[in-house]
Image (cartoon, rainbow, N blue to C red; front, side, top):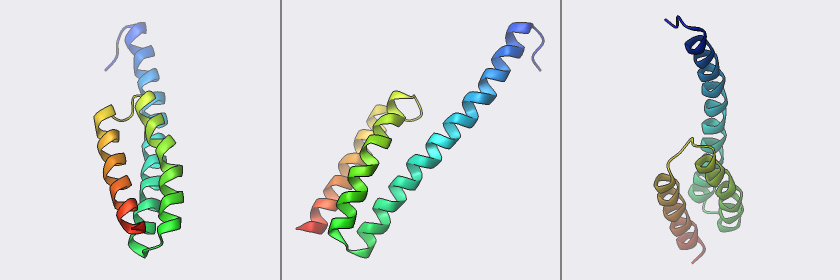
Length: 88
């Protein structure tokens, strides 16, 4: 348990940051799910639009420190390949 004033403040900050990051991760997962569902339905146009909407969310996750840069790069690359294959 936090004892010093500094450690108490850090505990409060960590709780706030945890809630914010949790909301960000949830938002990113929602965008990814929309892309996955569009790919599964076979609708190339919807998949492309969903992917274009998901890209900035994923990038924002990197800049905010929620996800690692390479993880996002891998996810975007794989999704882009699947969307491209769907339209071809």
